[in-house]
Length: 387
Ligand code: PLP
Image 1 (tube, rainbow, N blue to C red):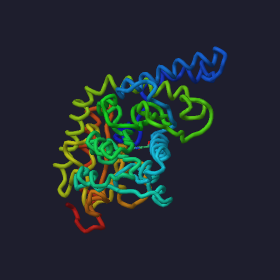
Image 2: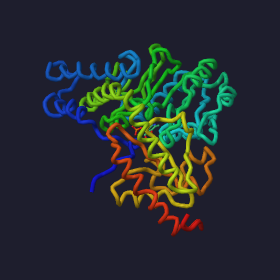
Image 3: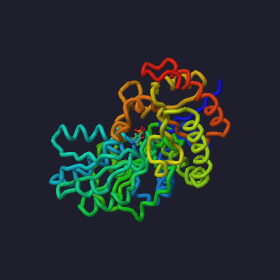
Image 4: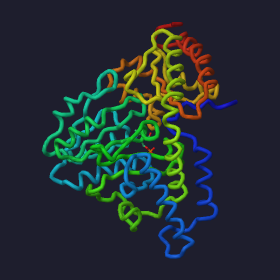
């Protein structure tokens, strides 16, 4: 059975070119980049090259990038550092729809005594900028918002939020884990002080990420140890994965323009067909302000998990929420924050495409999903039989 992988917001396949770039650093050049001898030392220039590749995709300078172990670490490091830089500014502004990497950290900080303002979203998942304006205060240390939502793909107006953060004189962090590689990013002319990204969302391996730290921004390391990453992140570098992340960023830059139209076209085709094929079906998230690869659709009166199991039998991989929350039958906090009704939130499925998704795969889903919905509604405990 072939796999039809439409769960690219959870993780992506490692691009063949990325794997090729990495292999020499697992097989031949396995020295420690901090070593004095040239066997190790020669590796350093490849880390520097990867840093250049990441910086190029972000429109940033090389020395503004540090490598981390994942997006979660980057998020934690940025927020912790922003708060440490300004102890007299303990207030945090974030949103109700953040990934657990930010949401969970802010919940913990709230328990530890930090005040947190949780910005709401409307039914399309969008922020209210006036609410953000009212939220920032003299004691706000950091505003942290995601660029694009992992569940719905909704894109936040980060530059507008950044202006609000700057007007309050506080740090601005953006969780861009889902945006980098899918949307153009130019940090040189932006209000962003910290930006997080993760390798495994853009065809690099798992276990590597990066954090952008604007030049001149005070930074306190989260991971204290050796002098690696210019003293900003201790720990011997994950050389092969860092090289892979660099290669993946270069490839993402090359493919982005094409995917804005090709990928979006496939996504729109899938979305239109599924919304038309079954009654009581709705799109979750802003119809336009969305990542080109993501669609989140609710099939009312059906359990999302039941749909996923039937799709799984056909080799189709999708998700009923963020990968980190699957396994729990609680409706997603993102859909709840958007006020999606209970019966619709439970029946939500996210499809997320990549540059490897083919038209044939989309046609396969369009053919097989509507009969699955019909069959599940026949046996639905919600009482809308056979709709
Ligand atoms: N932020 C967002 C928006 C994400 O989607 C994810 C992963 O799904 C993360 C952060 C965490 O990234 P990582 O899995 O690299 O820790």
